[in-house]
Length: 506
Image (cartoon, rainbow, N blue to C red):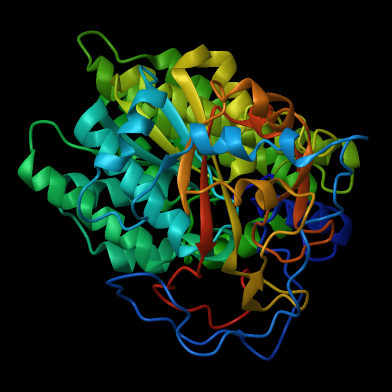
């Protein structure tokens, strides 16, 4: 499911349950909840390759006038320019040369120092579909791979999708563009872009040059458990515990997807709640079955560990859909569950393989605390900080203004333009610092900026829908939410690999 707190969740959505759909869309990415439309997308096709800054292909769909960055926060009585945090931000800011991942990476050395000895770094985005946020992730990942020993790129994509793309990254198996066109649909449509295709191709090229020390790609989410998972689990059981295969087959009856990922993600949640909960019970028993069977005498412990994780992924999908979307309390628990299992998957991979991980997600997921505790009690970054302590570093991203792809109020995909940021917002002040684009260590910022960084203010938090039922802003205290901040002056729409041809999720 595409991102959460500012991101999105489609897994629990049902078209006839607008209240929960509105809740999820306010976080941004839930596409399956988009209202019906018969007029097709409101953006034109975007080129499938790029060689510089992204620009919309064809005229952007008007999205109305730019929306101010929420109500201004009044200055304290007697405040003056002398008390502005801008001079302190100037001193602490590390300029960025570019957001283009190609070429020299020396300006990212400051990020390397800020990351220090972290084993998982969460790198956020303030929109789900801006070119510069995606290319900056590739740029940071390349630097961390080449200079800090990172070897895994984790994305809010299904575990099974991650395995398909990892087969390409590791072994050159399959066409990554075709895999993306197939898998990144419905709730994951925002990842169907040329920026991530460029990343995957770079990762493959790196592995060709470094076959004994490869980079890998993982999906940490659960909206779709593809047929590959069921086939791998059945194959493992047939080889190691053939006597248990009939029982496993019975537990998994009618669960292996036989349609496209998009069709499956759009129809599976529509099953009756009682059926979804019964399925979750069966997948849980399948997980217990494999755990109790063990690797067998003289068996391959590593193969068993991965088989258990694949069965865990299937169980996560079933349980993620088994919450009651008509119960507001269940909705909040569902959101918490999703962020918890995404954190669990990343932490398992890191500890099991020993590889350092760059986690790509929305700011609201990688944050150290929830931006909306009522609806999102605890987020992925908070779980990871609990698990890893200071070995988890959260990097948030902000922008002054620009454009992005998102669903409009009619459920149609459109290019929206906002900004420049208005007085009272975090971005308004951040953009007054001298560097156009820069990195800021929020933990070591000068005292003159500390109070400002610790004060909640309106901040862009845009996911899959704009403006969304609750608007595009969250009240965020930057220093409480992230360890490090990347501020970009302007962003532009990401390039679709295949432009949506109908309202997302429909």
